[in-house]
Length: 239
Image (tube, rainbow, N blue to C red; front, side, top):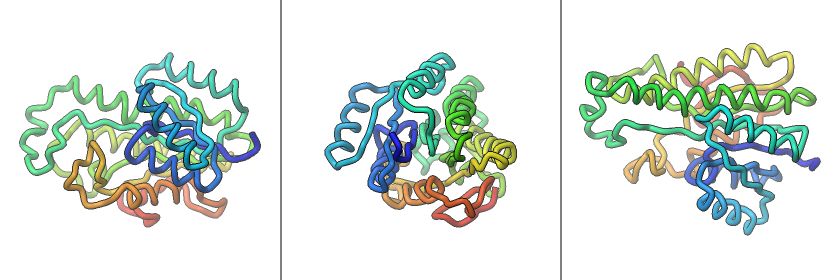
């Protein structure tokens, strides 16, 4: 396995699948990670039918032992991974963005915040810890799929679980980017914009291709590219 390899969480649908497709077209072997075996298998076969080298790995990023088992499975296949894309994400509040009062911070239970953090922040935290040993020989790229809803500079009301977990994910980007600079591992956050996915809904303004383009850009940066930044469409945005 001499070709470049990309591990993508939540790659069985939506942005994750489109990102897998675009990186696969560039010659990357895709390690597709998801919880749902049926949809994961369907997605993997779809990628293979398009000539993409894809392998399915089942894991739940909220479960510590599940991520450890994923590490063991990856280690049995290869000793290097070039790209990690922390794409798996959830919004447990209502995704009806026309009625923010339904997801008011005055109403959302703290348990929902904890569930949001487990998937959107702590899962990526453990996955980064897992993947770094696979990247130390030749460097790598880590992309945290974040959101403009996590920007402190434009922070609004409602959706506290989603907002806080994405803000915390951005903090991980800053922390890990500083620690990993000596190893030529670039870590960046990407906001794909409001994309027409199950989470974004049918009224979202951007296509899957538009949303995935910035993720692919960050995943394929050359050695002169940035690290520790927050980007949309390859352009820096405020934290």
